[in-house]
Image (cartoon, rainbow, N blue to C red; front, side, top):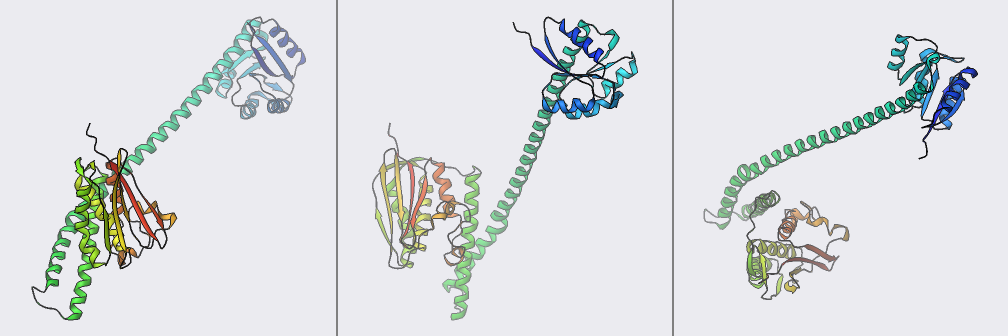
Length: 390
């Protein structure tokens, strides 16, 4: 077994004392010691910057430093190195003070022998290592406590955000939607002429009010739908459905809107069994058809098709609209994201429809995406799981 080499920096102005300590250390059998001797504190500081040591032996009487004042610059230069103080005085108070100032041990020169010196050096190194380990452990603990505190603070902030969101949803649901529904119904009644005819200008103003109220009702409903889905309060009841039947329902719902915009709906159906919530699938289809119709020019077409793709079913909604820039193909599925900020006014959109579609598709384990070419149109795709009869 090869003995470990302990490198010692001896700071001692007396050559005789230095030779004595070297001779003492030469008698060690279980450990090997390498001694570098300097006479001044300044030389020691330079040596510490050039080489690595395991321990420092420090004489308190030096030409350029006296007493315990030598400890501070050494600790600053090499904070991880243990220091054993050497002195000619058997002074308990000095010993205590040296330990307080950072020394690991205290030896009286005339009492030094091989056993005492080796033991002091070994213990000094071990104590310093333990001290460093405890310091590092404490720093790690402080970091973990700080991280945990930050996590708890973040959690508290998230809870506060959730509370504010719940309050907002409550306001939308009760304080806003209820009176809005009443206003909407009243305006609709006025527009039919059942409570009296309006002048041409009055009818125009009423039509604007009805249109804007329609948009507010859709916005309130979309906000509540999206919140229910994201919070897990929306119930998805999946069962065996016929894709063709769901497409027919969606087309029947959107026929009037297509006629109003003079857009033709072209449908390719196939009787394919899917495992899904039928109402939510129809919601996706009507939302995509609505977008396709709104953004298509008059006398154009919107295509709706479905086909089997292995274990999935692929739905496709294609329009001949203005298209979507490449940098916005992903963001259109985010909340309140539209290709043009004016769309919410001119097209009556809420900016939540595609976000709701994506959430519903994800609930079913499917995917939704869009491909588009400017001035040519857009094609939306989404997949749903095919019903497995086994």
